[in-house]
Figure 1 (cartoon, one colour):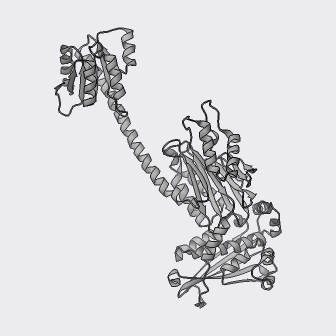
Figure 2 (cartoon, helix red, strand yellow):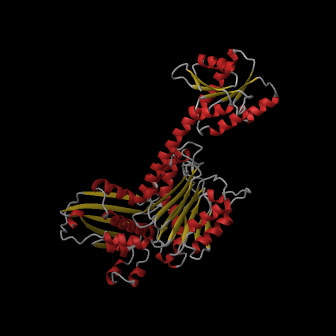
Length: 580
């Protein structure tokens, strides 16, 4: 090897030619362009120097002893680093079509035919080097983008997936087509024990498709934690995505609430494939197709659609899927489709492993075909949630504190009177809980207060203002019919009122909150409460749908007056440090 140095920091060029004169001439021209130069007299030596020195440019003669230029070029190109483009230019006197074609086939990036002037040679070098520099710049940007995506994926995993509720009970598939999945799965527990689940599929896949994931997750979790209804959460998410995302980016989403208390599931499908309700034997009880455009497309939700309500049994399962499952393709171009999914899901229900069975069947179907879209599935059991919630409630029941001093004047009070149509639009319970926590801070005991407020308010709205009968819930489809009738009456509601007063009394080792809920209804036969046992089947049947038994368990005192139209509940709690 001979090294002819130009600029010390210049790029390195390798000249491979069996003619010492040509090596000398080309080296001089390259040095004038700022290169350092190494030379080799045949192809084999050129390959060896390439491996050893990793030059930035190779000039290659064609006809040489030991190894010709085509052979050497193929070897060098096969050795080139994946993310590095080292231009290779053939220098030859063979001015034929065959030589041009074979030069390109051998991996050459250009060809110069002798004779040529020094100006033409230098122009060719500048041209090919410009392309090489641009290629290197693109590669650097791709590498930086890859690092950013990896970092974002780590952050997203930490912010979103690790905070999901009941991952030990809910089956989830998430298989990204690119490094960064455009699908999102969220699960959260409401203060009343309902479980909210969202499967979302942002437009496209990759990092760009997930820019709305964090605000979506924060909104979903915060509103669930405060007890907002499914419809209220979807409305807020839709408005948020509409204002946040660019016009070509939106979210197909399936959102579900499992309510063991209501023995119902609430479903909203906005652009996802069918949502399934299976029984314990894998029979499809119901398929809910998309009935609304994806979220973020319209500024407001359509007014003529509403959340679907289905009656459920304890062993039923809800399954949500993204279109990446249905549209997965095999080598013949066939899609996996609904029928194959349903067959796999039924097999999975019977084998108690829906998510893994479906994923295995999709992979067997696609074989080695590249994945075109993100694949997601959520398998949600309908039963068992109330049991775990009841344990939590029991743990948080207020202690019967001895300090029951009843201050004449509360430290503060919150007062809200809702009338007519506003009763259909406003849920005052999250508003009240937010106010309380803003003033008094967070605490586990507020979960019990949320339940008390919810039960008393829903009792006043459903049975007082809307005059709905709990008897509607007695049949297997009762809750779905009940809420269907409730939606109808709310849409036409113009009269009536509910007045809520909340009073706070600080105590030496805790506190007391008095809740008063007055409605415009006809009331009910509340004196019968005092004649019934506080617990037991008969008591539960008498109070079905009113949630009074639960409120009695959580409060120290519950009284009705004014013909049953005014409920007054007193809730005590003890500070955590005083319990220890």
